[in-house]
Image 1 (cartoon, rainbow, N blue to C red):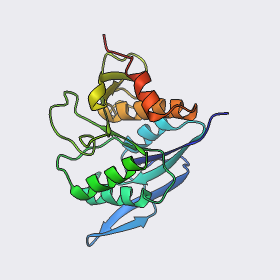
Image 2 (cartoon, helix red, strand yellow; image 1 turned 120 degrees about the vertical axis):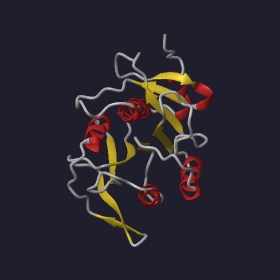
Image 3 (tube, one colour; image 1 turned 60 degrees about the vertical axis):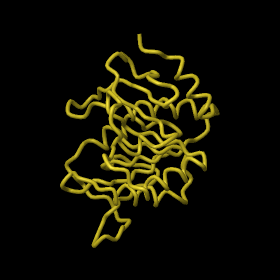
Image 4 (cartoon, rainbow, N blue to C red; image 1 turned 90 degrees about the vertical axis):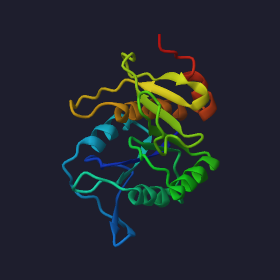
Length: 209
């Protein structure tokens, strides 16, 4: 019998039922945990529907506001909220151009506890984007050579992988979708009892030709 996996999706929110559903709000520099709001941004819903699966429990954490923007404080708030939760995987189809030490510290804390963190990375991998650029975070980008939903390795030593960037919604594509597809396949192996190291080894056999 497959085991359960607990996945935190930090994005714009999903319109379907999830294991847990909250939003991060910033008021006068104070981080607050509130109910999600309906915002006109399909991103999180598309990403969530890719990851959604049997025995996959999703912490649906909304970090985008009605203006479709987010901040480092929102992302820090989401990670901080998860500190005491049972979570196996944190999936973030987003990235920051600046390194914030508070976020880096939380990411390192999760990784030390064995939590797998997956985040989007630029296609050419030339610039630093956080949290993907942190050590031991799995970096995922769009790879047009992938004709199905299976991920491929781009640089095993850097934990850099690629996946098909297209979704069934025209305006949601790119590395965000690739992260979701990586997360889905990673979790499918995890539920079968494979460890992170074993899954990375398996994915690393898949080289783009």
